[in-house]
Image (tube, rainbow, N blue to C red; front, side):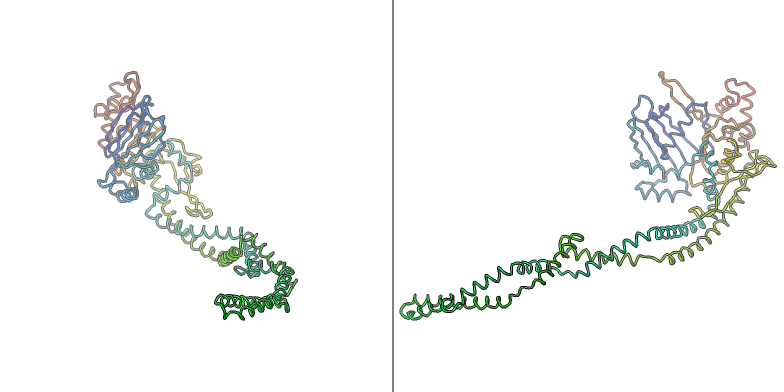
Length: 559
């Protein structure tokens, strides 16, 4: 519950410190006095949008701080949330602070821990529920009705809904896979064809690492065959020509030196060197002879090499800068091809899975529908009972469930129908309900949901607009009834509602140093009589009016 709200330099509020208590608290005051500003400030602590225009004129920043005590039935959820976000929650209290600056900057803290605004919004749903005229209007949107029905019947609906949604997720995924498969079959076929072509082209080439370098060497030899053959032939002739060949001449030189080697060591040394050269030349002559015998010009082989090199160059243009890169590309393409072939699903097989999942989903939907229909009956009875107590005894309320395609929320549309006068047809709520009727229906729902509320504070912001007399009295009593389960704060212009409150605050404007500021006062019993008398008759308060106010208060607190 909200224990304290401090507001400083916010709109026309200079500084106020409001203490709140259990039960029903009414905020009263003339239109424009600042009641809604207090609700705007509270909304900031719950993550609502903060505007720099909220900062009071002449100030640099506005500050709003709230002290919340978390109810026992909600402490586990809040504790888990705080642990997740590193927020201290050791004393079961939360001090939420938000600072707005004129430059647009927001500073948010929870128990002194800096947090983003989004965390305030997430935490706020565990603390406060605000119902205003806008939320009453939200009843006109049928899409909200299923959530209200499920909230009312949470004990019966939560588990079947969770089961259904789990089955729906699988069903939705299979439907999407089948649609994608059907839509992408042509694209997948094109990708398969491309990969198969690439793999086959590279595998057919049967490339070898370093093959290109060897072929280039062989190509050079064949392209220069005549030059190579001529040079080898010339070298062989110089070495081996009879009588005049270099080898024969060196042999003669060797013999000459050997004839005198015994006379001088130097001669012997020279003879040895010439002998070594002679054998080297003889070996070279033999090797050149062998090379000449191996020389065989084959123009067909040259064509083959050039064609092979052209193939390699073509593959390198497509798949890489070298043979090694082309081979690596082929291996990767082979892996992709295998993976794509493995992932390729048979549409028929997928349709069978979808058919089976549809049966499971249908079963879950039937259970959910059964529980919702039962809950709808209970909600109908409860709302009609509540409406009767608010003088709508001739009103018929009905929850209709109409079949539709499977969605995340089920396979039925939930919509509230209403008949305000006997003999008329039931019609959708949006077509028949007035503002006052919407407020009472919203209040009836809140009354029924109060004991299940996950929050500790309910706020009603002028939802009683457009009603008066005994209906206003009934609305006040209904709020008091809700306040037996949770703390209730209400902004009201109705004296009947103010009278049944446990605490009443008066918000009013004051002039301070030529500036308008909002002030708030917790009224004592006598002050409440005066204020309620003004609410009854306006500016002219008579003894009869005051007596009427006293009677309202007495009746409210005797009940």
